[in-house]
Length: 273
Image (cartoon, rainbow, N blue to C red; front, side, top):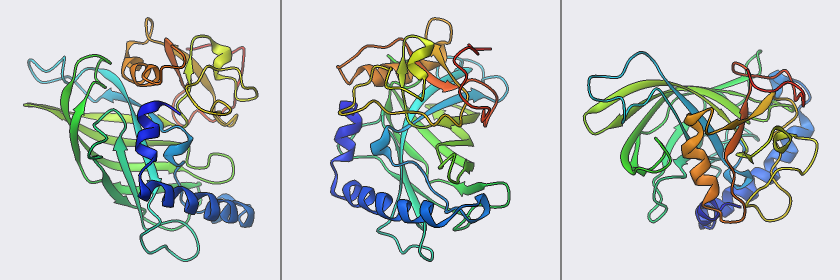
């Protein structure tokens, strides 16, 4: 696991969450065969965290193009917060989240609650809003540290046996100093670094990864591609975080190749749009 994300996972709370996720998640997936019966869930951060692609809605305010860039990326750790009273036999009343690029001592957590215990008829779960979080991060360009506030609303996850909560979309207000802008966000878990398209292949252990054991795999349910920083500068923040692991160095991040939810499946010959 990336050294920074591993540090986050070593808290007592997160160890408890992981045990609950593995236990309850396996029971839920075994019991539910249809999307409308699937419990609402996120992929626990121990599996690699979510890569977020931020796309600014409209123009930045005067003088704010640097601190509210048109696009950027970050890495968030999300967990079902099982110490809270669960809804029925599945899911948690609340999830916790943090930006993995913000300080881990003390960890900066925010919380939110699912609208419902199970998915709706479209296989979707929603969270109206998350607590705002503020911390120092180099997510905007992968190099410069800024104090960033994230205020998240309208989160929508795909859940069920195939997607398993591995992707979401949301609206996030990003504030840096006097500059603030609204962003449309799409996200995918787990984070997988890449240098070539084959590194994103979900059918094999081909990609380099600063993880112990097998590299994390993106579900073949999703159409993904290798977004290299030279051609897609928005991935710089996620690439910088990945490279902190010190095991391998990558120039790109695997991400959704098509418009959200990009569920056309993996195609090794598709390339990027």
